Length: 509
Picture 1: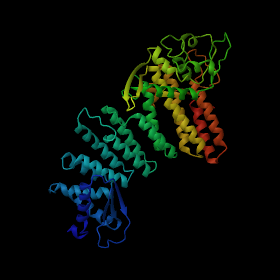
Picture 2 (picture 1 turned 135 degrees about the horizontal axis):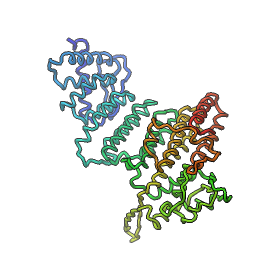
Picture 3 (picture 1 turned 135 degrees about the vertical axis):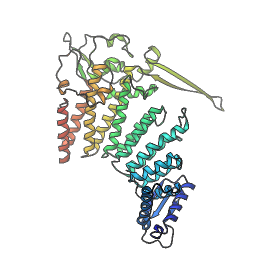
Picture 4 (picture 1 turned 45 degrees about the vertical axis):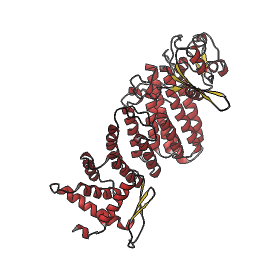
């Protein structure tokens, strides 16, 4: 009899099973080093932690392995599903990389022998023990639709109750416990796609962007986290595409839009672009131009190097029309935008539709306080400006990290990605006046390197002028390259590769 090989096996498995059934708050599982059984139970349970003494791991796994494969070979012989589930429990806690065991567990779920919610709790233990287990993540992805379907079509939970937010917490734990955990961030990407397909509110884009920002600042060598940031950035940029359904910018606070517009304007502050009209020569300082008006459609065109024949009243959102549509001016200086420009827009133009909610609270001293929250529905070109600000933010983050940390190849590869996206942003905006998915994310779309050439030379195409984004990116890149060249020898080699890549895509310093 197999029980003779390890008589205590069933008792150990039963103890583990009973603990998990009685205490659903158990979140961690560890193997505890122990040389001898000392006539004590090898199962330890304290608060949210479950442990198993190391001396019993090998004989216990051999026992459940034999049992399960014997059951698999003799399907005609009936076995109590509860016994099979208990053997699978022990097998997967000790070795979760066997896909056969997960498939057997799927069969039990489909036959209603296992509860889906309890299965999610169980796989959480597995992922704590082995944080980079692809099979466990795949099993959770298979379970999630069962959980969400059971809640009905109108289900849209708050973050504290959302199964998808729990998934985000689990992936964060896994990423912290195992470096370069690409499986965890791939699962995170799946959760965001599932949330979008179901129309849920949480987890939202803003919380993901901020949380991954903090994570990447603490894990500058972990490229898996930066890959996930790239995914979020592309989702944000594609929000300008009319075919998108994610609604990331469905309702933006006026203050948030103002701050993000300022972020873009600060990035290109001080740059001057000269037009193709040589009839007059004049330069305006930052204070004389956009500083008085704030970002406009013409500002967005200048950023991407796209020239329009004449600005119309519909193109102008802030400032007066004459100052923005003056075609005789040969230069436009990009500086700081007026912090009050968006507030003016909401009062005097119809380009932005605002909703104002006022709440009044009376205190015991009969003092009345009014709280006002203003939100905005952005017009298409403002959506482009909002999306562009995330690319700028990622560039600023990358520059700060390169200055702070020596010889991190991951940061330079992230810089390559940002340069790659920049060329596609310029190309897409010049063609469509928004960021089209076929250009931004489709690798089959090829961009000719000579499209940009030397940014110091004017193009013969009257519809194109020097893109301020390209100039700002190259100026800032030049600064960090000079700094890196003074540091480690290995970093110089990495920078040389990066510079060759810039040459290949037409962004030569």
